[in-house]
Image (cartoon, rainbow, N blue to C red; front, side, top):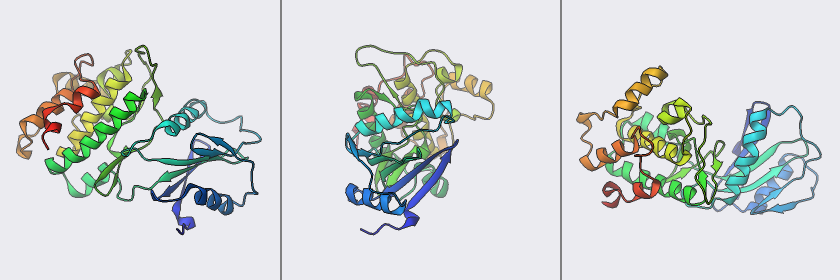
Length: 286
């Protein structure tokens, strides 16, 4: 398979360069490795195997890397290496050059994301929203079963590959303790998708925060709008406590409305787990 230089997208994240190589599922990782080495003009490096990827040991790292990069990037790389699910963007290789650049060889989701889909076409038919949301549920169910909370679920991170949804961007993801519940006080993600307890800065279960964010994603798919206006945070918190309002003219089914209200439950203790979400009648009824 031929890959051109146009297949590379380079982004600078606060001084730390990341290059994402978007590839097809069938793309051979060894070919990707050879392509990257040739394109970047590297000499043949010493390669040490790390899980399913290859790592280029770096001679030195910059001492000026921002603290949040030092904190979150290693965690993201650790997490994406361990995830393997049909509804999660696959990372084929992770490479590091001697100048500290990190290269991710990733699966391509060629059809954009949920945000662009709704922006261009308006509210999704409930039947299509159900198919996509069920796949998001399966992705998060898998993550939570692996002890991973995503913490940045939003429409832009739900990519499309034909009729399939692919979850991506684990930059704020967190590994959870196996044998105990650990509460977080870190604000992560986008304000419009953040649960009330996250915005309030109180100790919270990151998995329940994921559930709330899933509710916002589902609402956007069905209504082509956000459930709460995030331009005024205190006012938004007040509206969140009153519960979500679902437009009647869209003809959303009672079962679907019930699920939406459950996901956007302001009390995180009453909010369902991902297992309970997967059992909801709206998802069970194909």
